[in-house]
Image (cartoon, rainbow, N blue to C red; front, side, top):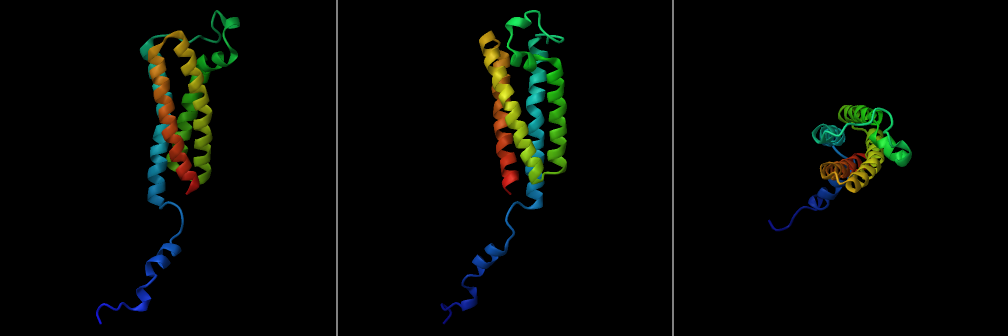
Length: 158
């Protein structure tokens, strides 16, 4: 008779699976938020490092050949845009680490997609100019933004 199991054991595991709250545990949410937060600021630091390593000065406001440069490229190459990107990255990093909520994750997702567009513009213009160092940095930044986007999606869906 030892092979006969009591009826109350059947389905116990399915009941516990149904009663668990959906989503991530608070510790897991905090870990993903911290990782995503650190990765948000990495592309900005890579870009600043690339400018320092390559030694190409940024134009103060507009380059000398401003009429021949696309307006979007002026925006991407502006030191004010670079400073704004670094500041926004640090703020987004702080938010994701301090409060990894669904709303902050969605903001992080929008942030990554927005700056990924500018990374693609930077990649294309630097590739046309033959600046391989900047191309490598732009590809690395896009890769980091892709990983950060996946982490933000995970936080937003949980």
